[in-house]
Length: 304
Image (cartoon, rainbow, N blue to C red; front, top):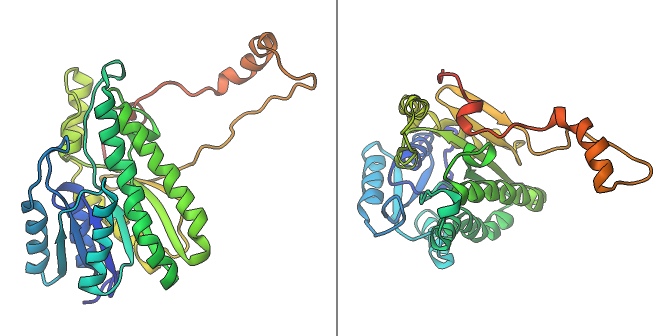
């Protein structure tokens, strides 16, 4: 099969539904053999259902592609390793890892339970680490490979009632950057993509105020299929020089996010005290302070 990913083997987590399935279909259409990982649980991470992964495999096969199902939980290190094992056993190699699996347990911070906090971090951040770590030795040995980690503007910018999710998604950015730095000498790349798309995850966003309802209607116009092309590209040899980056996709718009960097500095020869910080430092820096915003404040226009 020809295409940008011809001859490559890509593992996609959370690929039984939504964005993950769209990415898996795109990779298969570009010629990759795909490992479809999805344990089929609920949005909150409960239960197991092999159906979604099997359906995605059947859909790829019906289009002439190659795919195999894996129903492991990425939050379990052994489960994550089984994804890489299935890729090598079935297709002989592994070339790309797309860390997309996720769960949602939203709550206001002052109501967030330790259980819900940990469960979301275990899947989003822990799962991304476990699978990436399992693939890393193979990438190192073969002198190349690509990681794509799905992050979120809930972490990059902010959102109400998602402290666990936001923290996990910002952690994913740090993980990706560290992988990019540590594995650059082996020809391995690592990037992040923040998707805007209507899925089970976004369906859980509260829609009580008129502004929230308008945001939901905008989200519904953004399909998972619009996110898939850049993810497939980042797994291809055409992206050989792209690593350590954060992209965002919103319908037909693609954004490049800047990493945190200094925006203002003030020097005082005598050093600082709490009083001089109040009297001198903050008046100088206050014009450069960022306002407290949520994602919808920054992306306030209709998707294009």
